[in-house]
Length: 420
Image (cartoon, rainbow, N blue to C red):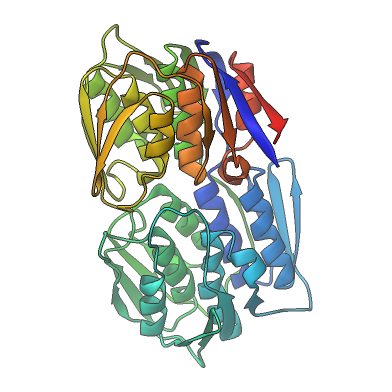
């Protein structure tokens, strides 16, 4: 197993091209199960999670190929309706094969999902939505066993305790494409990744309206065809590089990024005193001499993304004054707090709140990554810390960031991998 080593103190400068969105790609790959025709997906990031999803598709009877940034998915005569534990247990998004499988094959057996350890992430909304469409569901030995003679349309409310669910919206929307009649999903997730999936489904022949809003309408069709689609840029990777620029006092020009997907982050950065310069597909930031503390609450899109909470916390660690971060999506998503405190941060957790008192400097230390976004937050802290930081369990990073170390090296960072 490798670890990541960083010698901090370098102001990062240069251009960086943002990869395609991981959170768009994975449900979109699951959507290819809805058709027997070929699908071509462009701008696909080459990630550990990407390859896991391709393995799942192959196990379900698809031929898949990843060539540079293009994924080709072809059907084979052999079909399978069982998504095995060894794959699904490592990546939550793979649970999105449930809706397409039961819609297309009328049956599915999918392992309950795994993924990052960031608190309770139940699948009750997925199951609620599919049951409403006429799917009979049982839990057997850690698997969701789903059967349906015929899916029918329904008006479904998908709001949960912490708001809407992206993956539940994806799962139900995909299944509804082959249900008879018009399905309405109320309290649907509004994230750009949900809208991106809907755009692919429309290219495949689905009839969908309202995607990107809290109410999505799906008129079911008899079958779907193949399509070619280009994935949107990864807004979380973009946000991470924005903060890498600011935390080091550097000057990074981000390319292949949609600023309107990052409005909540940009707004908060402006509150700290940062100047943001953007075009339709690029972002550049200017850090002011003295930063101001801020308060942040994570919320479903278009609110501040929970996937940027850890990275923003690292930035707040060196921002003078007291900042408060409130986590309303995953209240237990604070495992990075202890690691940042090891580096000299002053962070106190009180329930779903983290109180961050800015310090003059962080110090390099050996730390351990607990999940994907916490890993990115520790990398940012390492970039600004004095001395050397070593981050263990970097396989988390490889799940969601394409060539992060190489991209940072190109910007001047002293960062490299070593064997544990």
